[in-house]
Image (cartoon, helix red, strand yellow):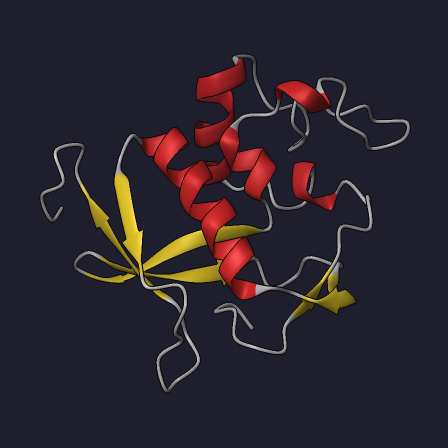
Length: 142
């Protein structure tokens, strides 16, 4: 698991693991630069420890809104739609519409990193992956 391909099922089961167990160093840096504060026992400072719900849900930064999905760089400017493989929502719910999910993650990445993304989302490559290319703010490969 990791790269999202056709036939992928996912649904948020509201377990709060994304704000606890997946709080890796990169994740902490990304989140804390938006919200400030420090992680407490590996948990987001906005996470309610009693019910594992976000206390500022509507104000979540882009990295939180997209979790467990992100774009993973595989070479140069080429990225793929990627999912954190131990999210318990994987395999739950209906089949994911890859085009819609890729568009959502691209928009969040553009917002988060200030880069322009481009993808041919209507057609999957023969290997089933959606390839997404990044560009700097002026549209140059980067």
